[in-house]
Length: 304
Image 1: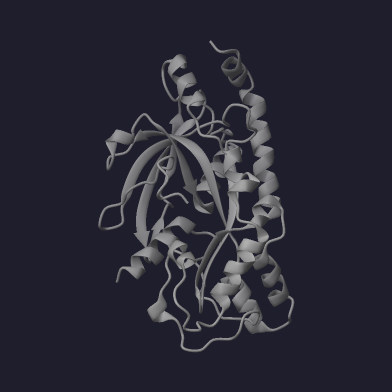
Image 2 (image 1 turned 90 degrees about the horizontal axis):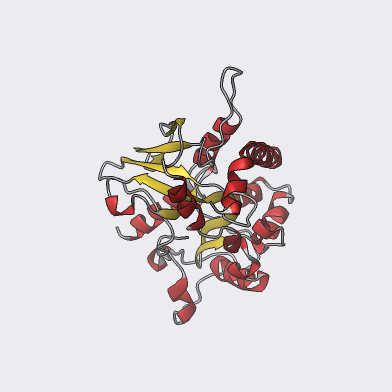
């Protein structure tokens, strides 16, 4: 057996403690992918219901954590949609964050509403092993990246930090003493709801350790997803923000527009404040909801 894999098995207890500390740190701080074949997403039926079983995997080789966090912004202005990852993910200045701070501190209630509508949103990405995918059985037994929101992360946290004393902490990312996650999706008020999703009983991912080692080694790097070169520069984001907040001026549509999802030229107002002024933005869903479904709904709306 590979020595690194043997070390992973030996360090399971300390791993749970370390991950629990990381989750607690996140709780104290704040109380892309559709065309990328590395990513998996559950499919739902016409009623909006879906079911799958997945297993969250431990940190990839030579990486610290089994998940990464990415902040993003998504809102509509007179010049289109601003849907971009935020540089605050990297603890760097971000033009939307700076503008929101000024709006919030202006003392004007309307400015605060605009800032709320443009607030950043948090998503998580982890490696998963697909145990059961009724809609696409060809995915079963494969490793993918999975992007999810706060609701699912809360369920992970609940397993690692149980509320009642008769519940034993469990590391969902453990290959040996973890648990499969039963993803149960319903459509509630037009959006995907994951409340009924739950972890199964404690069990190893697979019976054969060589097979588990192969799964572990086949994971995708998470660190590269939050590498600085995966984010647009401050100046690029500022330019896009200015365009989104600008009043349409009748200029010919540029090539840059082709890269902008969910633009709705027909719905743009005939007049709007100039760049730099507070512009009302179409608000996003609550941060408690899965941001992916929000973006999917925007795309669906554009088709009607």
